[in-house]
Image (cartoon, rainbow, N blue to C red; front, side, top):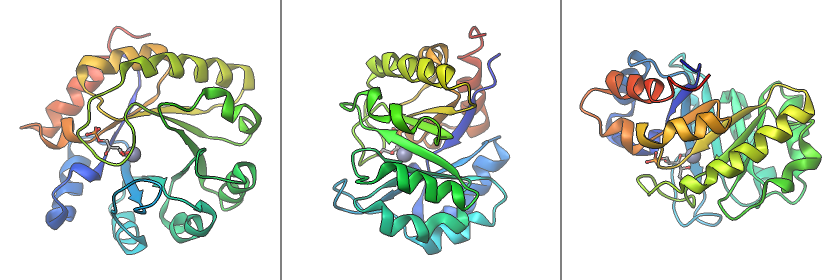
Length: 220
Ligand code: DX5
Ligand code: ZN
């Protein structure tokens, strides 16, 4: 079975019971906690601020923080203390190279996310800096959207870029991931699967994580 990591997206968790929700997915075998930060500008929705990240930081599951914000230069420092992975969108960063370097300088893994319409070539000159590429399989803003499975082609293109770089770079797929499409993405080169609505709506979360992993069983 492939060693894909599973990152539950807390956007689909019950917000008034967040501590119990995190404990539940930790117990179910989550590798990372995916925290979606939305600013009401880059995407038309609002989510959490730094105090929530600070509280989640204490649960012992590495935080994978996905910034869907304009002016990420202003927001990155607010989340740096709590992040294991900190991701900015290529579409939102005016000085992408500088911001990725600033994340790495703080000892945090630097991620870059690409919206569905954004070509993979936009990150070719920062491949020496990134630790994570997030391929969006939905247009960001909400959980529970239908997966754009055609993004597997972008995952393959990013995989080729990673191999040419000779570095270890994780590739994450975010949006609408289920056991029906996970194998496609992992076969194309994904190493981390974000799961929001599928996982949090499952009757048994441990079984849902197992189903995601097992759906990639045929992938070497
Ligand atoms: C979308 C977010 C995703 C989302 C994933 O803007 O970045 O992380 O919450 O949730 P599902 O798996 O329901 O698409
Ligand atoms: Zn996300």
